[in-house]
Length: 265
Image 1: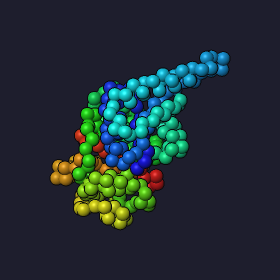
Image 2: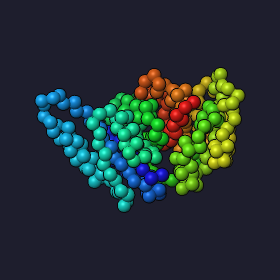
Image 3: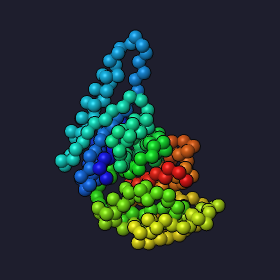
Image 4: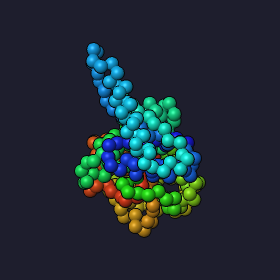
């Protein structure tokens, strides 16, 4: 894990998320990139340097956030983008190769009943980059146990597990698997990929209406400090295909959530 990206919003917890990312990156000697996006659509004949001025203002704000964290000798670099955040993420990923996005569930000051805000939801919904969603106020500590929940054990590419594999190797994380049989499941879904079995110490099979309900049923017995799920088109956060925001009544945990992206189901 070499490059970690932290989108910085206008919320008051931006520094908390960046500090978490720096502490996380320290174990991997990774670089941290902080990113801000803005939208300037100046028409011909208007101020030609308006985009540059906004970019400079954005960089100054990011520098202020960076100055408030303990960098611990981790390299923190700044990236700004004029346009949509998902387009910006794709551009920087294409240029640098981002291994992980670390982000707060709500990147702006919005309603408390929301777990995922609009910006965070867009990032998870519209990019192929793995993401670690870190609740507000969370202080980094090595992951001792992880619960990996899924409704299909079919994984076409082992490399999608790389963030979880890196975490397990670095922290000695105990990984437990939870296979949730949902209505209409296919028999092939019950064939768990050997790569998943190789990293796990326990496999639990549950029958529930949704993967999340399966997590709720078995969460207390496992007591993980990391929840790992796969972001499939019809998977854990399928409501993201209807809208970007996720209510706490629909999903909520107080621990970090590692979202691994499956490009094709």
